[in-house]
Image 1: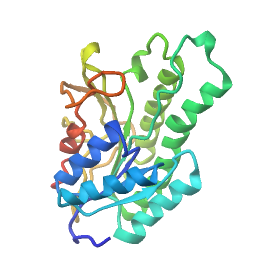
Image 2: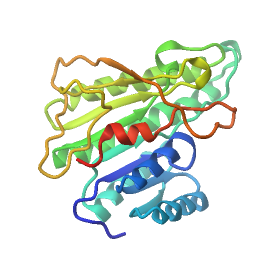
Image 3: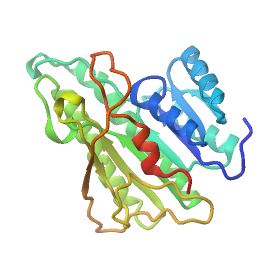
Length: 261
């Protein structure tokens, strides 16, 4: 895959459906180079073709985020092909098996936490590894309003998203002063007063999830001791998910990352 020298390189995990797919398409329309990751080869190649039809440079790399060797390969292959990684959106996730807490088991716990928590940990670990070395970058983890509110019948899913937000805040502080921003966006559905919560670890205090810095432009980063204010926005997506809910339009992620800079 060839790439323009000044194009922003975006990595999206969980890119084959839902929020991840919407995000990959939004970045492609914005002129970024998109590396899409997911577990299904045929669907991934179809997405790669679709992204290229939008005029973007794009590649699909088959990845199961539950496996660290595959995540390491994903990030290393991105660097080998493109030379850098400006933005990573960690969208791979699962609702697991909804139901009352008393019906949950070790298996239902592992099925959810292995993807939502361990997968996010592996993704951030290797994204930070290369972003810190290159002196800048922006990471956005997809959380949920359940990650700070909870919900009946969603104890394990809510717990996993609490974990994602906790790891996000900790990683933001660890990346302080190194030019790397680490943030989370928490979508909600239309029936729950849809809003997004942004954990903004940067120093600029703007309404952005994080800004992808271009060549020679510092990413801002997070300073030790910075507060993480909550900023809310309302926006809806174009299509319902498999449960009929209309999740928030993830084009907002692309706009807030400001990939033109």
